[in-house]
Image 1 (cartoon, one colour):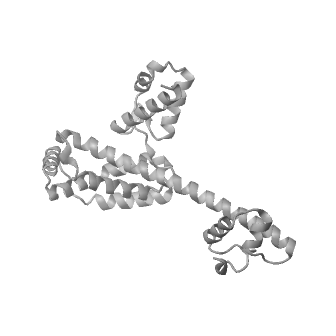
Image 2 (spheres, helix red, strand yellow):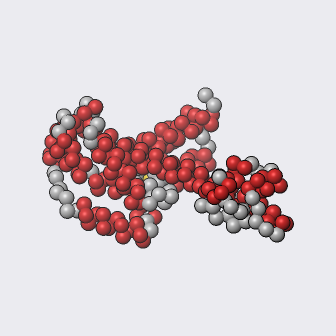
Image 3 (cartoon, one colour):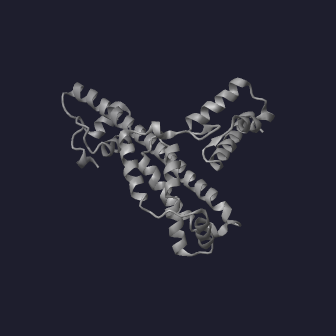
Length: 249
């Protein structure tokens, strides 16, 4: 196997291990994962730094409260105040609800969802600072939690339930972050295209001393009609130097 591919796969395994352990790994676990690849100390440090940047603690979970904005702190406090009104259950009751939820009892599922709402908050704080608001992370986590309590029947033991739910919550948040990153890249690409078309239109308009049509812009600049019209649509038909934008479609 290619060395770089093996390195990346091992890194993903370490991340999964951290996820299973509640957001952290020990340095010894990292070194053990890479022992057959004989990494240098500099490479090990690079892996550890990468994990910390991804909000994975080394030796203990990271306290992510410092990364919250004032708006997120305010939202978080209001949300915690809201869920603090929910009943508190002891371990025996939680186990009973878990077993009942595994058997398909709807009321037990709802109780179990309420029980783990605080866990969603704790997990969400690990994913702050990655371009997604805390409120959205909690929303995605709550949806995953609600869905996950309906899948507990696939487990062999009730002791596996909390770990399974935590992994589903983390997976949902990570998927949302990835989706947000893709959308941001798409938005940036679209904005760049609008700016390019607007710049070309302005230059041609200055030469002709009037606004230009999409067809003229395409003839003079080599831009395709489609790219020009797409840019016009994305801008809301607000590229000032192109005339009759709506009529040209």
